[in-house]
Length: 297
Image 1: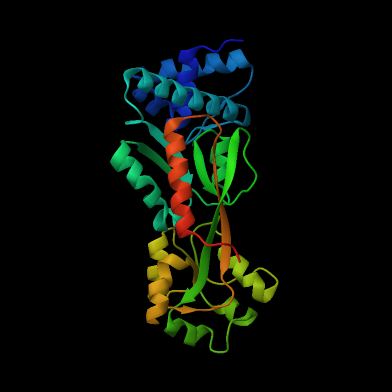
Image 2: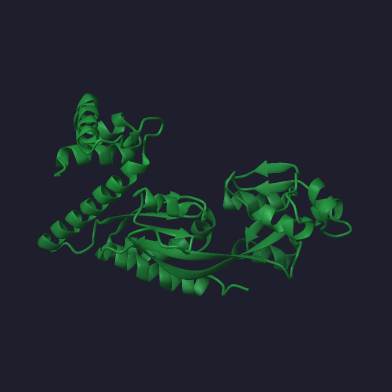
């Protein structure tokens, strides 16, 4: 069975842009034309490919097809660039990364490629426990993830561990942990949590309570906001050591468990396809991560 290229392009644009309207604008056609092409493609393959909503997303059947469309688009772009002698300048690489890596070391991997080679990046921020899902969906070409199991069609390379420290301000510690960290004090102390996918604070609390802790929560989806909230005495939270090292040295933040940091082992998963821009990025990520991340405890 051959797939009509216009139908495949319309389907890919809907998933990439998240709506039929935006897909129509990028393809310079009407919304009805996009809708018709997607419907014809679904009829041709005999399955629903797009989960209509806000945003639109691929069904399980659509994920594989979208990944195929994304890969074919990248290979075509690279082939044309090679024919023009353009190298990798202007090539775009989509990548998923957790917010803490983006705030600490990941920009150092992107910057020289953008500055010296003209690469463009489409960065999606996703929790490290869930970023490999974006690879499965075909949304990205590579991901920083805590998942060591390679997604189908991908390679997985161990990067190292991001070390987290449970920190709070001295005033907060005096108020909520005067006798140390235990089940009673953790249940009473306000906790900083990045988002609903963030399980680090719960993981730390289970070390002391052997159960889930129902503490007051501040939801703060910002790595720097996490640090600022701890400095302001709003709560305690797990912060990347790289972001709080200076504050710990100065004594404006205290480590609740100095001998028990949490190490989150990270992996770099990427398409197996030989795409030069992706190869450049992989080399850069491995080099920078090697100097920024820890060997796990």
